[in-house]
Image (cartoon, one colour):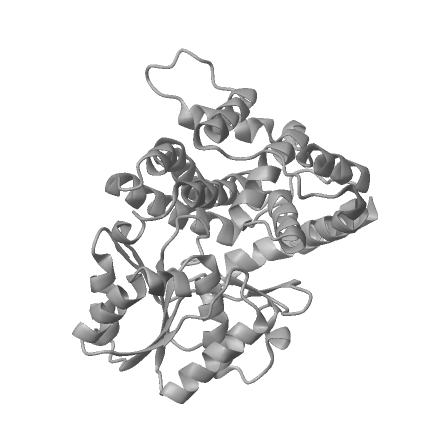
Length: 397
C-alpha cells in the first residue's frame, strides 16, 4: 500500500540520520558507590551549584539528601527541586526552570527514574532555548546546547540516562510530548546499585520488563544494526538471568548492578534502532488509564510479538539461541523464546491482562496507537485497525 511505502520512507530516513548524526554516550560511572565518583567529576569540571531534580519519595527516604551531601562534600552547592511526578507535565518543567534560574545554578543533576530524568532533560533544554516546550517537541528542535546535565537512575528500566529522548505531558490532556535530539543525552551518569536495593519487587519487575521491551523491540526493528543487536542481546541475557534475582531478593547487589547495566545497554540499542508497536500501545494505554509504563509494556509485549511472528521468526530464533545454556537439551527456536518470555512473566508476576481497558475506548486507542507507530517506528510488520483492536481485546479482561 502507498501509505506503507510512505511510512517506510520516513523510518528509513530516521535510520540514515542515526548513521550520519553523532549520537553521544554519557561518561559512565558504574558500581556501588559510583555516585561519589560522579559528584567528584562534576566538581572537577568547575561547576558550582547544582539543581537536584527528583521526587518527594526520594526526599522522604533520605536518598536525595545522600546525593546532595555527596555533592556538598565536594564543594558543590545544591538547590533542590522535588516536584517531579510520574509522567511530568509542562508546568513541572517550568517550575524547575524557575528554581534553576532563581538559585543561580550552572548545572543539573537528575535523581530518579525516567520521569525525573525526562523532566531534567527538558529543564536543561529550556535554560538555553528560549521557546516553549511545544516548540521544542519533535525531532532535532533543541537548537542550543542545553544546560549541563548529569543523571543518577534509581530504577533499571527506562534507559533515559543514555537516550536522545525526553517525554513530558500537557497538563490538561496529559497528551505525551516527545522531544528527540542528540543534545538531550546527559554528559555523565552513575549506575549505583546501592541506590537500587530498596526498590519494591513490583516496581523492579515492571521496570525490568520496560528494559527488556526496549532490547527486544530494538532487536527486531528494521533499523537494527550489528552494533544495536549486540547491545540488545547483552541486555536480554542479563535481564533473563538477573531480573528474577532482583525481584526475589532486592538487596542482591550483583543482580541490581547487572540490571542497571542491562537497562543502559537496552537504551543504547533503541536509541539507534528505535522501538515498535509495544511502545505505541504502552504510551497510549498509560496516557488513557494511568498505567505505569513498564506495566503497560508488559501487557502489550507478548501479543505484539505473536502478531509479528511471521516476520521476526529468525530474530526470535537467534534470541532463543543466545539464551540457551550448556545444560539445556531444548532446541532453540522462535516459539521457545516466546515460551521462555512467558515463563519469566510468571516467575516475576507480570500481568498479561488489565480490567482497566474499556471496549468503548477501542476506536480512539486504535487511531492513536497506529498513528504513533507508523510515523515513528520501523516496525517489522504493519498492523491494520482490525488487528490492533483484536490485540486490545486480548489485553482487556
